[in-house]
Length: 568
Ligand code: SF4
Image 1 (cartoon, rainbow, N blue to C red):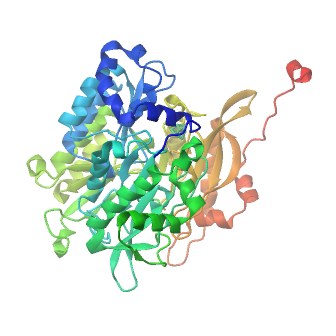
Image 2: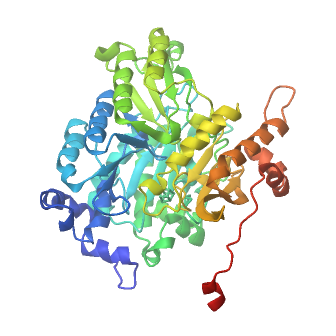
Image 3: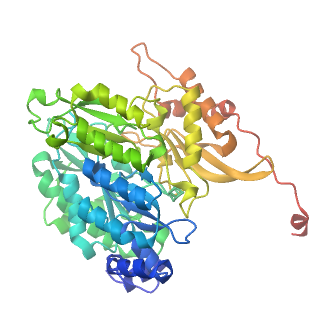
């Protein structure tokens, strides 16, 4: 790795002081106050998930990384305490299975860090910054009766591997996102990660993982490309950590990416040099050849699901080979409106997860999983207590049985806290949700995504309906608006949504969504067997003009010329 003065500004910062080295300064900043933080150290604080909050006048967002979205009941209660004491009671679930707190001050961090590291047993190293980020997985990883084979604790192991690497991997050209699962629905979104692995069953019945690189959304979306390799089930625990380490190193060493920050993701390296180059380079660094399989191109499936609902799961106390392993326990998925919880709700979830798990609190089987669709799942629930659990969930304002929209809507942080936002998202999402729940029922897996800007934290390009923030003139005022994309999907025929509606003013966007989704429900194809056409397929069949006719977006207003315009 060689620094060059022509590299992007952030490279100068990282060369001057490693992001991890800000750790020792946090206590000093806390003692001396916000004004004592040097400008150059604000970006470095991100290495521990600490991010300046709009309008950069003393508050921070704090991201807690949770590999695979897994949280114990005790951890949930401890995190809720942090949110309650320091974060004005807000807990946001992110699309990468993290939680985020807002309104933190620098003075809060010594105690908050102590609570997270020493009481909750979690860590935030590499929660943000130019680092390997949270490792994502299927919400039911290891517990899904239909998963192709178990991965054991591999997700945590991969996260720990990155943490242990420390400064070896603390200066990447930019962020590096990974995901791994053997979920047959590929809900872990392998095609939009920098590096991912997904379950494969080959024609001869052999099971293993395929590996992809170079996926990512933001303003220049790319789907990941398969390395056309097969990692047999028996080799997974040995080979996958090697791949996770070495692909990250290939990215780290790609100095050519460090000159333009907007082109600093591995997706550009893969696009420029090709997946074959990545595979050759990976094998060179591994010192052994992988099994090549040209037939492994895309995961077959990749549904917009996170297993919310009540379902059967494997019993962790019994071997998966035992037929009774599936019948004993339930998971209970809870839709979380736009991914936002109150701290007391999160604490209550922790308490319920412990109390209603098989064996009760003493049994120690309580567990919560946060999903990439910003929902949560209570694991290992004893079926006997299920009716009481459902009732108590309702009492805390988190009913497990709710209109499908609630689990379908994904919303980024937006204008309330995010410096990059063009529009507000969380409150708008609440209004949209309320309206759609009252007016249109949906009965298929669906993703409605609301992003405050083109950075796509809510993944709008792969949603059935994806919205990204803009501005427009409406009733003579400049207001928040959304460009609306339709028909994004992942899986064997991946495609990004196409922009169908432009600059829909936010005061009417809920009605536009109602009209479009109602049209889908009324005009989709349903086979005599009852199979329903997906919204993505429907969008391929319906042209823009028809969607626009259904949508009835108000005509675009043009600002009347002013004297200043005339002078120009
Ligand atoms: Fe902020 Fe844009 Fe990401 Fe939303 S999509 S959280 S507005 S950067």
